Amino acid sequence: MAHITINPDRVIGRISKNIYGHFSEHLGRCIYNGIFVGRDSAIPNVYGMRSDVVAALRHIKIPVLRWPGGCFADEYHWQDGIGPLEERKRMVNTNWGYVVEDNSFGTHEFLELCSQLGCEPYINANVGSGTVREMAEWVEYVNSEGDSSVVRTRWANGRKEPWGVRFWGVGNENWGCGGNMRPEYYADEFRRYQTYCRNYGENKLFRIACGPNTDDYRWTEVLMQQAGRFMDGLTMHYYTITGTEWAHKGKALQFSDTEYYELLRKACRMDELVTGHSRIMDRYDPSHRIGLIVDEWGSWHEVEAGTNPGFLYQQNTMRDAMVAAIHLNIFNRHCDRVIMANLAQTVNVLQSVILTDGDRMVLTPTYHVFDLFKAHQDAEAVDCFVETAKVGTDEWTVDHITASASKKDGRMTLTLANLSMDEAEEITVFCPNTGSVNGRILTGDARQYNDFGNEQVTIQAFDEFLVKDQAITLTVPGCSVVELTIA
Ligand code: AHR
Image 1 (tube, rainbow, N blue to C red):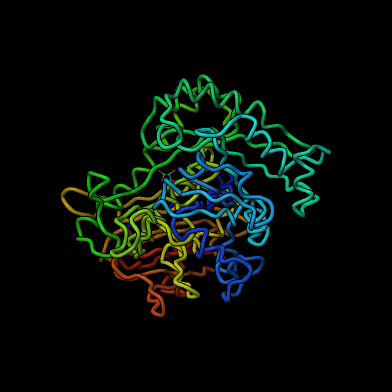
Image 2 (cartoon, protein in one colour):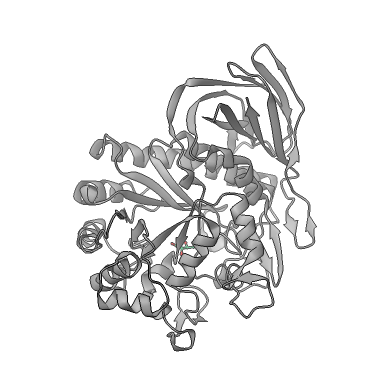
């Protein structure tokens, strides 16, 4: 038996819609084939963007999309991806499978995609192998109205108005694939690069510095101390894997019960990491001017057999849906510091919300979690106290129930997950002024997944609850995610 007590008067902060953001890299079949098929494709598209994928992402109200990487970002030269298609430079994508990148998806295409999605673009620019001038001119190209040669090139390429891109990432994983830098060195590089990323017109850039890997607290300390005043956001990356070595990760579809709890326990670690990095940020930035941006997160399994190891293609089960629910509840609860998060990656790579195969598309269980949580976007997070037991194995235990709550437009949204693989749990929710209640549920066996032509896991209406004396009593099956809308 678990208890959840919601206190609508204790507001934690506003849940930025950007916590529900996504990430798309030039990696495997994420951009090419997954999102972009080109105008001449037989697959229905608008200016080359797959119409099915765009519609699906609009349905979950994708608020922000990060591009072009990832590790690819620090080898990407934006000038190669503009102008007539046949004249664009070709390169080999040395990070991801050594395949040819023909640059047919570049700046104009990305910003067209964001406009079709109705989301904000987040461009992650190149520090590792780029130059200050290259980055400065990319900002100028997308944002300036001045009559310069750079802007004239944009006009010649068919775009008169600047796009007004706000989110600007200065390098990616510069402690690793982005140049193997030390934090002191990167802090100085960040200060230098961001100086020349100018604001144009009304558009004020939101300057994002490369933050730590997982629990590298020293990186956060140095960055905050030496470059804090120049940044608006600091990133953090944490992936959830089973096993102790990256080279021997567990599989997406075949896993033991122990590995189920191992993955969930490791997903819960996001709370410890956000708390730890926030504590350091609090010392340098007590007013919370700088946002923590978790711009890469999600489960990372072994690639599916028979697929290119450099393409990071993995299937996605109910276990991954639980990982998503755990993270999103954590981010909601930390919305006073976490202002954006981007699941890695949107289509066909790692914990995708969408998988494609030729002209076919399937929505993963993780997609449906984003659907269940979408009412939290831009709502006010309120105190949501959960009293619950632990479940799991001797080695890996997790809270039986995780939850978060927010209010908007006179309605309360409560999202909760029963993390047990198979044990149902009775939950009593105390929420003042409860009138009508509506529910939706995503549930299934932990190993269930959606395959092409065989969608087993979808959202169902949920009305197995009783409302009495300001309390809602419900029994939630194991391995499920529930959204309650309380009016
Ligand atoms: O998302 C895959 C890769 O993981 C990204 O390119 C990189 O930033 C991270 O290491």
